[in-house]
Image (tube, rainbow, N blue to C red; front, top):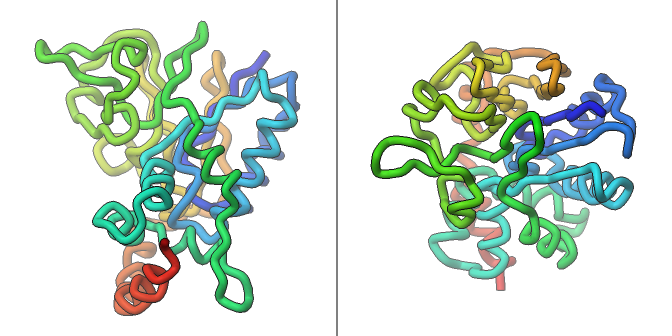
Length: 255
């Protein structure tokens, strides 16, 4: 059985469906792991959540969907609206997520089952091949790294970006997302690998490339057309002038 690990999707439903086809994913014959950050930034968070729920329902024993920091922010914003928590979410892609749940009349409807599904996601998984987390392993005071079973509530699992983890970790293989290859290691648009680590997030919303890795072969699958992040950042700057009024509008939809 192949294990297929998909990087941060961030609302890019079209790329996600293309990647499943590129991998020739077979439900119940392949083991599928989504590394977290299904939502935000891309244009169809709602569609990605629905697709993930469908995949899990179709093959509950062979699909694992991990919780990323963007799921944490989204769920937290639903539970604690009009707080600094929801403000942070809206500033980091939450607006894009809300727009995907907005109908033609401007009404936002996030199904409770979506919130409950995202809230229930596990934060780590392990098999014979690797340990899988969204971001990093918890760091101990002596500089070593802790197995997630010993600290399942650690924020490092979903938020960590420890450069020592990237350079010094030497335990069982860890596959992770969260930090885009090209930021602190590797090349833009390319899955980064060394013996003990695989970074599968290639920044689909920024580079246009969504990636996955197959274990145990370490074969890489990619879809999309690469664009340098400088192009994406220029687009973000053009849109930032509209952000305050958009945030004001969507804040009224909470609570």
